Image 1: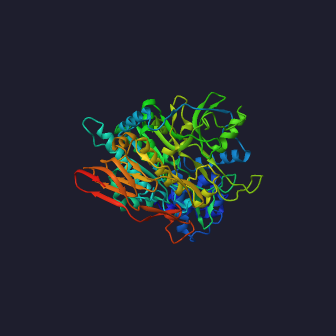
Image 2 (image 1 turned 120 degrees about the vertical axis):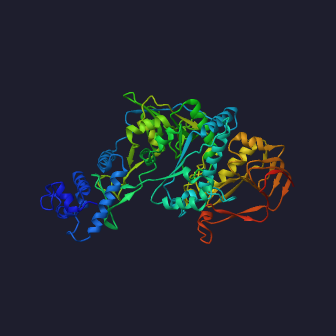
Image 3 (image 1 turned 180 degrees about the vertical axis):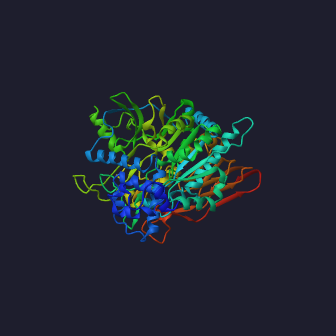
Length: 625
């Protein structure tokens, strides 16, 4: 770093005549400590009304290192936000003024139902779109936003390390990587000469999750993915705001530090832009970028067909969606038309959709239509963007996403905050800045197939009104068994009906505990090809399939069966398998003798008896029980 004194002299500023700092004597006295770029940052902060940041600074010689580290942080905050801290502070002033005035962000807009595709699992159209999507997959890149810890769940670790289900114990990240690798292999097989294309996988982390995510990958050999395929992009936090004038908040524990909080997953766009990855992907001939969130264990059931929709419809933006009940706590995908003619197709949060409809000539507001659902499909925050138009848009915006602020005021005068706030942005708000010519659509899938996020702790989940989704570790795991049971049923197997049970205060359907690796059943066509004859599975059964060429040919299962096979082994499973199986035991979430990942589910398996078969050598095998 340039020496402070010479740097200041070069700018024509000395400790004595830094007139621009005259209004802030503590800063002025310390100017000679600062390097040229730090002087510029100090000027900028003063220009933006941030004098309070320096008012407690002692004489030169006291805490000099801390004063320098303050500017290290300011430099980071300035470089990580599109347009720098000046833009951040000015955006904050405008948004805080709008918030205080109670301004409606949708003023002048009229909502209508946008156009999109509604798919029904297993229909011919669904199957053909799945095939089209698998073909496109080798031209895609996947981006996982994983900046959050599991604290809200009652889990101290990173969310992607949680088991997706506890029959196999595979975590969410392993399932995602295995799904991408299966898509990669299946897609390459569809090319005449084969191909060896690797699908890039980007993980956006935060200060909270970065080290733990890298550790999870490295300690598991990247779950079979080439380390060079995986790129980690760490998002920075943003400065907190202490009042309506957008004064930056000092950290309560360190007066030389600005308090920071997460900015939201919308940062993924600016990080991708600044990383140079998008241009690299374009030069490699890639066409699609798929964004997804950290704990939806059903998502990859929907990816192939949704990607097929993007390719066949030519969508620049495709939002994955599920049917939503009116007023359900999930955003609705909505077309908005402004009085000046502007249009956009975006997610409107559920608490804004109903008043918006009522204010624009729909007296019933957000109401169900003849289908029993709202005509506005529920956004599940999984996006498929066409790469070319995405790059062109980011060249204009540098990835800056429309922000919002949500201050908690001390009273109705809205003059003071209960605690500091910050600007936030959401990944799914990307379409807000698109031109009307952009092709923005959606793909609706059955909820049972595509959406079971894990985000609520047991206590909060138990308070959810009856009939609404719990979105907990309990419901998330049970949803996987339900989806797999229904898929096998559709493929021709007889699957016993579920029973209803209550775990951690949540009433759920308990289906047979069926799970399989992505390379066994990537698409419905894959599953149908491997379920032959008259197979049946009882309600108390558990089935785990781990291998590509495993065929159920008249299997009758009443108990627990675990099949592991290398890819070169072809295994036919027939006959009657009966054993005592794995019993479900209730666990109270307050029972600290159990691990957190079990407590938050409310159940565990007592492994009484099972048949486990392993085929480690190539060849043709038959298991006839």
